[in-house]
Length: 175
Image (cartoon, rainbow, N blue to C red; front, side, top):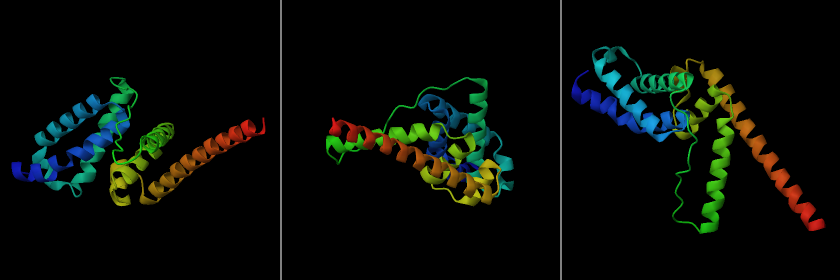
């Protein structure tokens, strides 16, 4: 793989690599370091990359594995800070949406690692099931099952929160 092809195939994935690394590591600096390290490793192995069928899946799988190695060795791991922007809405709506996004992120963080990764790859990165299967090493059917279970768990947690809120409001109104 020459420099121009490397830039076209690998460097165009840097944003996706960063988002995946950040979602796993929950730390911006660690995610940036990961992208840099993986990019460097891929550059060093560029002659072998011509044999790879799906370069995006291979690259994102490399990022995922590197992040899991970091977590296992406890090099990095900090709380994710909200960075969502909602500029075109009222302050009240912006606050509600930020709160909901943060609650959902926290719910996702408590999912099993595989479900967490699959939800992020599918719902955030928009990858196809076949690509996710290559990245995770799972079958497409297992991807669908884990995605469904993860989403169902999040829905149930949101509904439980809503029920608790409704119950509290109802009790306050009755007093």
